[in-house]
Length: 331
Image (cartoon, helix red, strand yellow):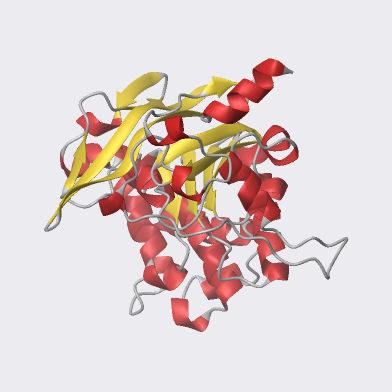
């Protein structure tokens, strides 16, 4: 079942330097029981795309009139951008949608215990007693693998290790039984052993609760382990999407190829790293045509003049590139 539909998402910000484009005309879907990975360099628009689903972007955000964000809630389609006021927005802010942030210490209030914050959230979103909220919170802390959950419930965020804080934030996000979980680089600050445990936990939760997950990261290794499908973003545009196997085994867009080529090669540790040349441009200096042409080795004159459209490469795999599309047609 399609849980989230994003159509023609264009998001701009009004700034002192003028109006800048953060996300330009992207579309994607997330199904129940599925993990969609969104990858790209910093500044690609991954986080602002995810925050749009919860209307968490700042007040200077401007969405285009063609933008549609539709969320399935109890068999009905909810127009997210039409929601107004705190009560309506609770549907997508901690209700049907929850978010896990990269740094848990920025999410937990340092002077309030973990348990008090979890209980407050539950009482806000569910019609239950405080005793029931405490029980659910402790059970969820235990479910995510935190030992002595009743003890941790009474502790502050600074008293927990990094891995425990991340698990506590996952427990808090899941305690309201969301249909969609947005994970914004949730494992970046963790060591590899804790990272692996958190990734396994999230995969188990997808199966158990049949929820959809949007997993934002710059780490293709994490995507390979976690996601079912992947969307590659560059400077606010969606340049390639498809199943993880399709995109990582047969990358079609030059930017995706560059990201994969930049990974260390475990079978040849002496091989030099080959980063994508150049730097991602500022949104204030957005290139015309294909936004990647300023860094692309395959760029042709038309790439700076026209915007390539998504071309189907078979079985849901698509990419926005003139050159690779013609090569695929010639095969």
